[in-house]
Image (tube, rainbow, N blue to C red):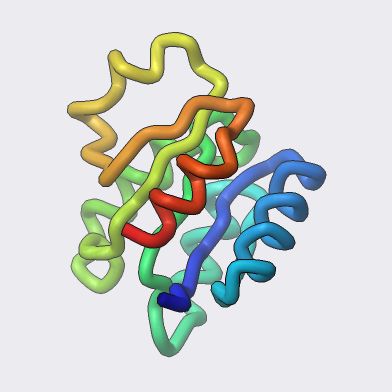
Length: 118
């Protein structure tokens, strides 16, 4: 099933690699380099994405700040989030982030594709 996916990742190489992979699977991919840009993109979209793939550690507005603002905004709060992070303590943040699933970096391609299709 084709999905609309917003990839929020500050590392250009990772962002573009994930974009290419997901587009190769038939998904429509939008991207943002930080949480602030992602919020701006979401406000501009007529049709919101089906899922947000969110990095946590980013400049300007990190994933934690983004998620807090997303959850407080009724227009976009319902969009499921898949968190990706190299943080070895990712499990400590599960309750506050309330994401659909959590992926550790480096990303396992099969787990990433499964998370985007769920």
